[in-house]
Length: 129
Image (cartoon, rainbow, N blue to C red; front, side, top):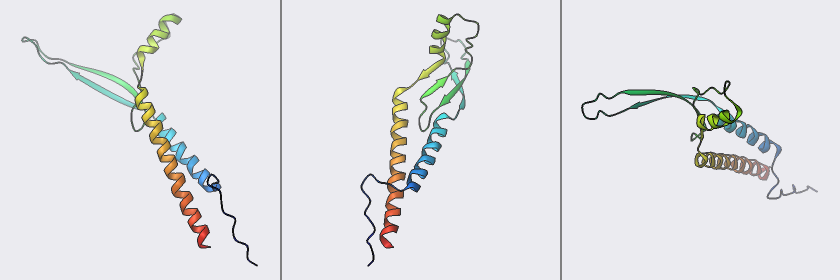
């Protein structure tokens, strides 16, 4: 008598699915933690015959697909008191929580898609055997 393979429950997944999703999550974390150096250029318009000038600013940004954290590397906090250091760090770092939520949502969608597609493929192969 040949035994029928036991059906997997809805929330039971293969070990290979977990390993692949783990590597995908690692890639997404790497993409979000990657440091991007930006060179911003501001050009002011000329008013009342005054010349316009260009201002350049260097920024460090983090996040994929949207930037959720920008830092200004010009701020140095070594020589300041503790209170001034906290205020300076708030000025040096700018968080965008909407972009952070978007990045988390995109990561969850990518992880879920990878898990569902791989699990569908593996269960389909099991049925054919």
